[in-house]
Amino acid sequence: MEFKIPHSLKSEHEELHAELARATRVKGKIGESAKAVAEILHPHFMKEEEYAMPPLGLLSSVAEGKVTDEMKSVLMMTDRLKSELPQMLDEHKAIIAALRLLIDAAKKENKMEYVHFADKLISHAKNEEEVLYPASILIGEYLKLK
Image (cartoon, rainbow, N blue to C red):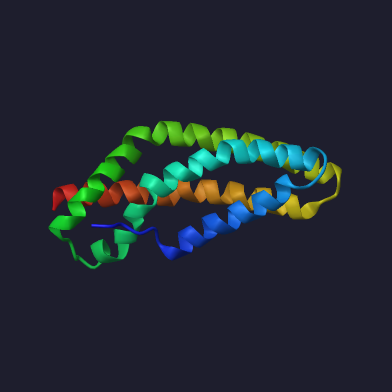
């Protein structure tokens, strides 16, 4: 069974990637700081899209009580997320630290659009920590019970 990342999450990731790519093309400290963020963020986003976010595509079905045997294969993803969660959270700390440097650079140059972008990405990371990762793990735990 193929597990699809919910469209809203996939498009948010694409939007954040596009905004970061634009920031990396800015001359000076902003561009340098954005490149440092991108270096950390890209492999992290790849992991999320590989195993942290696809289980969330089952959320509506599971909430409606629709559980099938084919859903069991998602357990490889949710178990991996559960075991790698401390590393994922450490990566968030590194991403946020890099984003704070971007914020500082953007404030010094009065480029508030990059401050707002960095704040949005920090919020995105917090949402993953507080809602998305736990929901993904819970999907796996719920399926194990069924």
